View (cartoon, one colour):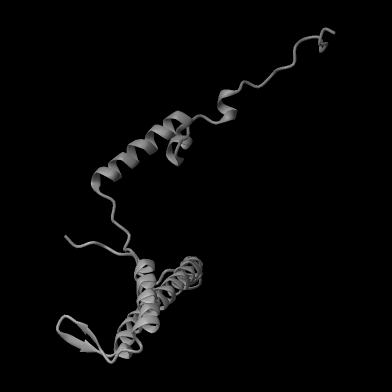
Length: 163
């Protein structure tokens, strides 16, 4: 079963190995490791290469994190600008599909209302007119005028109002 070792542990181990080699093995001509011989300088170079690679990966990860943060900030700024920009373009050019297409803005074609929607609209309009008591031109013309329905007041005898 493989075990996972943290980067900090590997760095500490590599540094300890280098320190041990420099302290105890530098006077030896070679170090025997699994039927292969290495000079102390070669052994130090192996551990130092690992440390250098870890440092490079750490720097690359940090650079990647910084780049992602910058990209996120730039994307948010673009999104905010783009929303207003699209509204400005639509206002300036009236939503012309050709012009909008030039800017990469898709204009949705208006959907034709279905027969059901039209019928519901007519029913609702008639209900509203009936509720409000509004009349059309012909209906208003058919109503008696105010002069036909209002009797003309005639003066009473004596002319006094009774006060």
